[in-house]
Length: 234
Image (cartoon, rainbow, N blue to C red):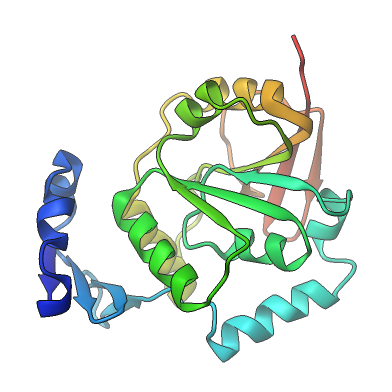
């Protein structure tokens, strides 16, 4: 991956290159630091894909508000306790975490990719969102060493799904290129059950054939399924 920094962001490339994993990322990717903005370009496709997280974008706000106002949205069904504390173990581009914050919950995001964490931190700063907490690091280590418990723990392991040519699919594929896999998913789920006050939610495609632990129950939508695990104090 190539990193480009203007004079206002000199040294950012040195920080990122200190991670050995960065050097193994696809060379079709370019990370740009321009003044107060950070964005990613994926030149793997015929039409370059630009990843720029912007929580103030009018289209993003409209889509977020549509889900917020739709009381039949699956998130209202899953996160049914008002004013809850939620740990989003796999923040990604922050869409789900931002929606949960908009619903009135106290959201903490975790992201183990330094690139994604920088993109997300930059977006939160530009949006002046002072509610969401973001930490860079591994979800298992965070839960193991933190004394804090959360009402809900939300996990999206980015399971394999059917590919298509849509922009959202290309965005998801780009996210996978810069993310680190969670090798022991069941270990994370089991720890999350002990840290959760209420339940653990694992999101995956509806047609996923994953071998994760059997949930207590499943909530399905047209494209997704949410595996629900009740807390385990054992």
